[in-house]
Length: 89
Image (cartoon, rainbow, N blue to C red):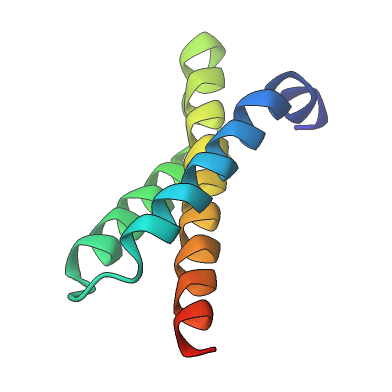
């Protein structure tokens, strides 16, 4: 995993920054149905990646996608949180 993070840190940083920007622009969703479905799908893919059922290059792609989606989602949540806190103050 350390090797994967070492190779993907520019993409992870870019996904986080993009998530921050999109989260700031969009804010929190009005209805939580779609974000919860996306979170469930991401959790299912993460469970598949952790189980090791997908070997070789497709497994690397799956691990990379899970890491990038997690970074993007965290950035979106932080951006939306910053927007909501900025609107109050």
